[in-house]
Length: 333
Image (tube, rainbow, N blue to C red; front, side, top):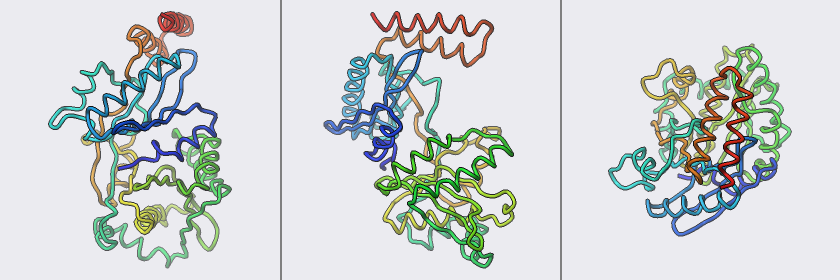
């Protein structure tokens, strides 16, 4: 399974954002790594990467990334392994990563629990896998004068931004910033690696969603619609339309991108997890975000500074600055 986050298109987007990006293909492995960080120290981040065909190739990828990180004066490499082929058969991925001297990251970035729909099924089977409500809405939404339009015009992302802002003001939630999504449209739409779907009622836009396309997977990333039109439930047939369009394009999977872990009803994502699962499919779980230190002492100092900032302890600014100084001192050794 490929991911947009390890693609040439994503590298273009990240460079357009002003980031330094590194790509390499080796013997059985490849990676896209982004140079990130700030005052507390720099690091290389491999979103849903590296990609490796075997445990041995994974080892080579990590060794190469660590050398690259050291050459860029980074404290660590942050990775997100996704494929079972990267671990010995029958092994526990968490134990394997720990045995490699890696640490579960204090900041989990890409979702480690997601919901996937198999698009290699025929269209009838995909629709049959959905709840009857979704199936009926898909077949009858046109009777309410609702239409869906896929656009590769970067200007049309403004519709999505409008409704994301309205939703954020009404209910309050964390969302990608306008500048980020606007640049994503400018960078990725011309490459065919992303698009925006517009929901219209009698020609007027009432909502939108953005999807990212890799070689075999469409990822459902950002969506919002008019609160006044909520009774139309237009988001449901929007998802099924994007799903079937992806199948027609020759893609093999539709990634709902992020659900709550099983048995955690109070998880922040629990509310929309049921919606995503209502389209049929299966759960996919990965080990999460892990850090490989370049210097263990420097990494521990970084973790200490991060913990202070997150906890908001008294005298945080003063103590945090001392921890940052400690990180920099150790990193120079």
